[in-house]
Length: 256
Image (cartoon, rainbow, N blue to C red):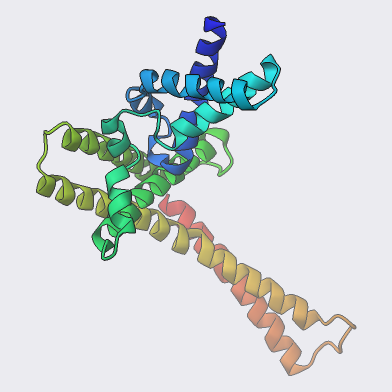
């Protein structure tokens, strides 16, 4: 039985960490940071409480009890109950969330938005690298991959600064200022990616699609009379748009 309980706790730790990462995405790939703050004593105590409740109030066989314990312990960890107090601050930003819920907690709300932005940026960077590794976006430009690596690095820096602050190695003022710089740096990298993607690919594609639409409309769905001035002008415009989009794509590819 003790071996069975240990297995349930270990599985709950993995599942609980997975749930935490879904809400705090900058920890994806850095699950060891969360694992470092797991409070196994609290988990064992919570498990005993679940077992006691199940025996007194629920009629379960062993498999049902195991699933019940796994679900309960996973939720407990995901909500921060299975973390040490310092971990609740570094990972879940517990006190910051509490302050954000209070009246006039605007600054805390803004800081939480910054935390979420970093998480989304890191997730986006991982997706880009995944696309490149799988060849889903052809030969991804080095500038794009560089920005993805920079975003991932900023996510890691953000975690380190959290550790430094809650281990007394940074003052509150230094911490707040540094966190703002991390968010601004992430915004700059996202802007680089947006600026690279928009003129190089999206605009030519839009022009090409518009040109194709003009040609389709111009051809007429019912076999309209060919050779009228309007007909010629429409065909000419559609052709020019398509040619122009091809030229822009060619220029963009040479820049890469």
